[in-house]
Image 1 (tube, rainbow, N blue to C red):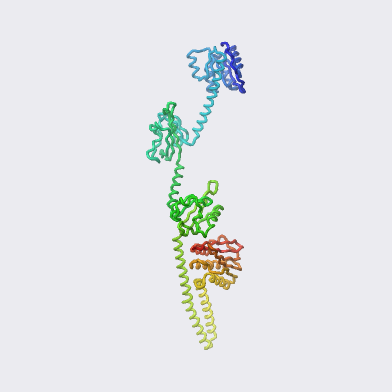
Image 2 (image 1 turned 90 degrees about the vertical axis):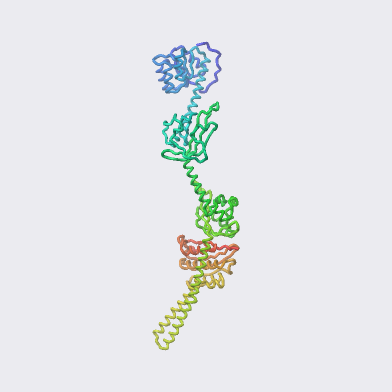
Length: 597
C-alpha cells in the first residue's frame, strides 16, 4: 500500500456501513481494517478462504465485501464472488495485485462493484466503497421498482403488450393472454401480426389497424374501438397504441393496451334501445327530480302536452296540472317518497293551449344502488278517446235505464193496474153470488197485484230518478235518503242546501248513482245505525260524501265490483273517488268533481 494522502473529513454516521474483509495476507488485512475504521466503517470480520466466507454469510449479512482474488483453499475470490452474487446479492469490490487481462475478464463476468489494485491509498478505498454502496442502493431501488412494475403489469386488468420497434412482442401480461386466449410464452419474440385475432369491423370510418405499426411513424398515440374476432369468441375492445421514442426522436417501441368493453358496449346498446323506445313511445314519458323538477321529456310528452323539451326542462310538474288540482303533484311525490307506487291513476292534465285531457298516470321511484331516491319516472297515457267512448256508453246505459223505467211505469204499471181493476170487479160479482172462498182468493190476488204495482214503481224510480230530471240533484238526493230510511229502517239524513252550479246533467246522474250505490253498500254491509249524505261546493270542486257509523271497510273490500263501478262513474266526469275508513270505525265514500269553466 502507498502512503496515505491527506485525511478525508468523514461526517458522523448514525448507521455506518458494515464491511467484511476477505484477504489471505494477514498484515495487509490488518492495514485494511485500520483504514476502514478510520473512515468510519464497521469491520465485521476478516476471512482468508472461500468456504469460511460462505459459512459466515449464512449467519451475518454485511453491506459490502472487500474481496482478494487470491485466497487460501481451492476457491479463489472470483469464484466466491460468483456464488455470493447468486445467493446473497451483496456488493463486492475486488482487491488484487493482479492486473492482467485474463483476471480482469474473469472478474468482469461477476459484475463487481469495483476493482482496486493493491497499491491503493486511503482515498482510493474510500471513493470505491462509497461509489459501490451508492450504486448498490440505486440498484435496490431499481429492482424494487421493477418488482412493482412487474406486479402491476401482471395484475392490471387491461391487456398490455410491449413491442420493439419492429413490432415484435417483448412482454405480454396475463390479462392480454386471457383476453386473446394465448399462452404467455408462445408469442414473445413474434410479430403482433401473428396474434390469432381478426379485426372484423370498427366503429369509425377507415380507422388505422391497431396492430399495424407501419402507419404510426408520425403519431404519438392512436386509440379507438374495435371488434376482435377469435376462434372461440368475439368482443368489443378499446385499443390504445402508444409510440415510444428514444432521445433522438426515433421510434424505439410500442405499447398496446387492450380493454374489453363488451359489457359496457352491451349496456350502451341496451340504453340506446331503451332511449329509442322511450323517444318513439306514444305515451308521455317524463323524468323528474324527487322534488318534481322536469329533467327529461320524450316525443310523446311533446305531442300530448304541446310543450317542447326546452320549454319544460327545469320547470315543476305542476305546470301540467289544472288549477283545480293544486295539491295533486306534491301529494303524489310524498307518496312516492314514502315508498308507494302509483299505477293507473286516472286524472286530468292541462295542455299548453289550456285544454284539459283525461289521462292514466303511472309514477315510479328511481333509486340508486343504496336505495336512495334519485329521480321519479312518470308515464302518462291519453285517455280522452276511451273516456269519450265510456261516456257515450254511460249515456246509452242511462237512456236505456230511462226507457226501461218508463216502460215499467207506463206500460207494465198500467197493465197491472188494469188487472187490479178486473180483479176488483170480479170480487164484486163473487160477493153477489155469496161465494166467500172465491172472494177471499180475489182479495189475495188484489193485494199481490197492488204489491207488484208498488215494486214496479220503485224499480222505475231507481232506474229513472224523475225527481233528478225535474227538481235537481239536491231534491233527488233528499228523496233517495228518505226512501232508504223508510225502506230499510236505517236513519239516513241529507245535508245540502242548493244545487251545485256549473255541473253538467251527466255529472248529476253519475253523482246520483254513486250515492245510490254507496247507500246500498252501507245498508247491506256496514251494519250501522246512521248514514249522512252531504253535498258541498267551493270555488274549485263539488264534493259528495256518504258517511256511516258501521263496521268500516276492509282493504279487500275496496276492490269489490260495486266500488269499481263507483270509481268508474267518478272517472267519467273527471272526478276522483276515495274510500276512507277502518274496520270498526265506519266508512266515508267521498267523490270530488272539479268545476270546469
